[in-house]
Image (tube, rainbow, N blue to C red; front, side, top):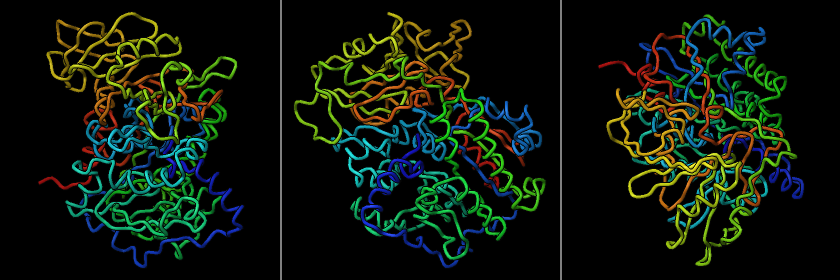
Length: 538
């Protein structure tokens, strides 16, 4: 699920109610930038790079559509370039964490954005970038929007870790972001909050942020206002949609104002698959066909598809996959408060007190479970949760080791960084006890580790467990199930993600216009790859 501004669904339900009650008319959007010439690249020695991130684009959907001759643009890009069908996403497989990994080249232990929802031990509150309407109402519209619009880029994203935009600015290169929620850069911009949302969310009329040279976030920041008519009404999610993003990029191309690097985020497919589920091949194909048509429009903005690849490097990637969630009669929702009924579980919207035992931060098919009492045993708590057969694994950190248990086994895996075992990404590990808990294949003779159904499992799990302060464990649901707090949105008979498993972690990567390849097919390796494409060697 996308963060609230990128996905926009839940907050717009609330905003629509506010608008209807107040009788306000939608105001003319929004932020004007008199001259956008400063975003244009002045570097003629390197091709421009356009990176299109398609939310919940999965390899099988692309491959099936191409086989059926339904995706001519994807087919063109595959035939003219590289196609990688096993790129490993970040973890949790929630877009705000994935975007942070893409733009910083690191997992959450370095970039400090643990998920869509997490608990701040320092502030003693839940941080949420937006989930469902009920959770937003309990957290408070103001708090959620302030987290998403102000604190995510300004506070939560590790300030000591430069983003791709900051790296490019340091090298004198221009960059732009269209509808990306993670966008921290060196150029000041103003997000302007619509009048009908200012009152309900108690937000100022304008919020100053630092972003790349060109920053477009629907009608919250629209440098093309007065230059081009854009689909930005409340009924089109105030511009936080595919067509707004494609139209914006097409204008920059046709006006010869492309920066050196342009990031474009396309959210619409995610919403469709959450509703229909990834098993509904007809619905998935219809969604991917729409993306294909929008990519065609983007490339044709250069004059032709061939000319696009002559002038730019085009990269298209998914951010995470999805697993089908069972129908209601299969009992697919794991009610964590009910599972932990003997503890005092914090209800969202209340205050944390001395009586609170546990705080939950649910990210669809994974959850963080925080213990607030020192006398509570992490092992005992994990064993209690693991009694539910719908739980896949539970993991926590203790005495320098990461512990992992499963609901269907009495074995335990212990591991930590550094050691005499090396995985396929040249990462070194110490592993004690049962590697099969995470489907690891260990060759002690050659000191090798290979991964099975949990891609880059050790590094990704370690990254999440060391992403923020607190005593907490990670709980993963088995495929077909999802976790829930009292007001969590659920997706019965639809699709969900968040987990460490292969279906939700493997995404496609298409690269056209260059023969260069990333060092590894992981989201965290793309930042260095993009810098290699953009920066002139010394």
